Length: 544
Ligand code: NAP
Figure 1 (tube, rainbow, N blue to C red):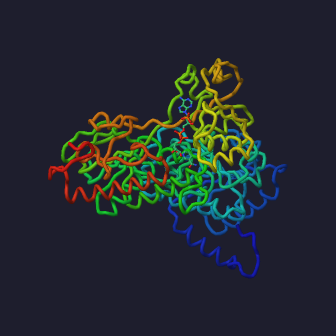
Figure 2 (cartoon, protein in one colour):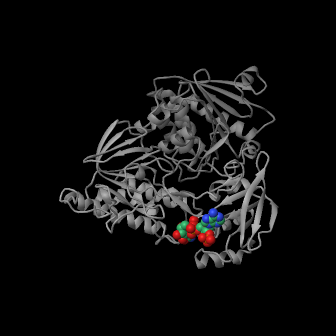
Figure 3 (cartoon, rainbow, N blue to C red):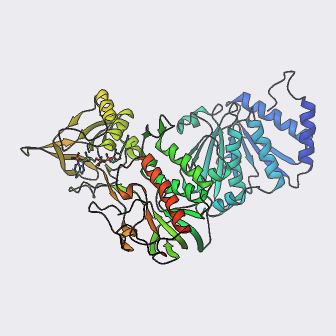
């Protein structure tokens, strides 16, 4: 703050005038405790003193007390570095380790104004997220005076603490002033937010996203407001928020259907955990999660999304009744875009060591095996993509495939071979063993059947997928011999009003084909709702 004195800067007197005006209107006084140490950060301390002196000249709202860091009060408030500023310490836990320099000057003034106003102006959706948090959140925001994005993120955190002083505490840490604290958290990019010892945000966020990240204790990239209605009537209910479901939401709503997407698990489905996608038209190379965020944000322009909500029952009829884990929907049509789940190997030790060395998701769990040795079981595109991802992040991976050649796409095989990742062909993992966690796999070589043991820290499994058909089966939707949902050329199942799209109907299982099927199904549904085949006695998938 006030560090520049060049001719282009706004004159200091004018800034003081504006600040005087702002502080004059504040209804509340602000208590500041300032802790210093002659031995630590003298320039930051002097700068803070100068700013505080200037502020006290223009407003009587600030009650300032300065103490040495060895004072009892520092211990009482858990002050660990100097200079430190504590804001209204009797009513909230808001500590700042640093000085109001550069961009941080904005944060500092904004905090004072928020405290002086005595009210926090959060948006209603953000407020709802914050109010729903019921356990402690101890937040650390790492900032730097040269970072223009930092004030926004720091103020998000300040608002959380001021609105919920009962459960939130905050430390704003300037990494230039406190390199030791930054090192402790490996916080070498700013803004960076930690809560309860977990990294929850990198970069600036909207207040809604910040508070969702704080609530879930992990970085959120798309904000979906919570919906409290117990009964909702729609035209099209889509089960599943992967590429097929999200695309169907966009197409359905654009065709004029009131469309909702219900997803019990991860939005984006398998794409969300795919390291890199290289074959989605228009995007040469994109992280799976980024592509999902783009799709979800797009779908939200049109359809409501209900994440973390499981469809438990669908009752046939017109309207169809859909019961979820949270509410009841009535719908004219239901699209099952439920995708597929990773197939299990079915060998001893697989279930026991799941989460303790056995994984079906290299993107999710790969970083835990950096510098360690793992096997990847499978010979398709997933196995090779994921093996390359593991190798790229420093995991020593060997692929184990039951045939003598891969089934993956050619260019993936070429890239894989170019990376020199070892592979064992004609080999199968027949047992996973260990004590607390995976320690070894037993491998059988065919033909001949000789067995060997390989010591490993992890076993990644990518051997294809099983379609998710539990809900479909319950309502009598017919399945194909391979277990996928049976459908006709318009994505109709045998049950009137119920359709399917994406990986759950089998086929190529590409993001682009799933999206295409979702679009086709939504358009077919629109046409059927205008002209219902079940009313006219026309037929569905099985000709009945
Ligand atoms: P997949 O193509 O069905 O391949 C599964 C692999 O696992 C096969 O090699 C299969 O062996 C093996 N396998 C199956 N059951 C096994 C068992 N019990 N024990 C040992 N091995 C077993 O599945 P995917 O690789 O997950 O791919 C699914 C779809 O997604 C495909 O259409 C694929 O093209 C697509 N995909 C595309 C990309 C991309 O374009 N970059 C990336 C990932 C996935 P066999 O060869 O003996 O059958």
